[in-house]
Amino acid sequence: MTPSAPDILRGTLDLLILKALSWGPAHGYAIARWIEQATGDALAVGEGSLYPALHRLEERGWIEASWGASENNRRAKFYALTRRGRVQLGVETESWRRYAAAVFAALDAPALT
Image (cartoon, helix red, strand yellow):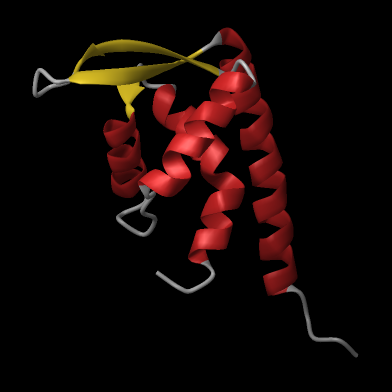
């Protein structure tokens, strides 16, 4: 991972969490693992970034939390996408695609004359 990767991750963490939860409810560790696996281990999300983001998304009404049992039969907080969160996932995805297209266009642009 490059030194700038954490900054990029902070800017896209909400999108990645919403996408992870689009597959169904999950606890924090499962969300972090999904992000790692989905990005080929290029992005790792630490607890110091993940849980504040989850609380922020919950405050915005994009996800909701409930307590349940994990795979290890331990008490864990599970997060689920709300209807508003599913709409926001679409908005965030489109915004990210436009942003990425603009960056790729700049990378492919000819030199200044």
